[in-house]
Length: 121
Image (cartoon, rainbow, N blue to C red):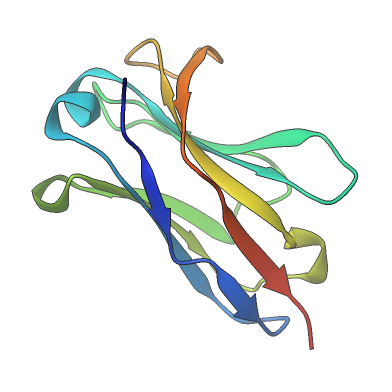
C-alpha cells in the first residue's frame, strides 16, 4: 500500500492561482513517476501532467500547458501542481497518482483521495 495525501484545493476567482500538494515517501519518489489527473462533473478522468522519477522529465496536457507546472521537493517528499491563470473549465476534482514504472507509461498503482478545485467569480 502506498500513501498519497493531497492538499491545497479550494475556491479561486478566474485568472487566479492555486497550488496542489501530494505528499508521499522518499522511496516512492525515487522509484516511480507521479501524475496529476482531474475529473469535472459529469465527465471522465483526464490526465493533465506527469513527472519521471529517473530524469524528472515532464509532460503536460495541451489544455493546461503554459499555465500549470509540476515540480518536486525531495526534502519534503512532496510533488506539487502549480496552477496559474485558472479558468472556470478547470473546475474539477484533482488527483495525484503513482505509476508502476519510473517513466510516465499510463499504468497507475495508487491514487490520492482527491482535492476539489472550484474556479468561479
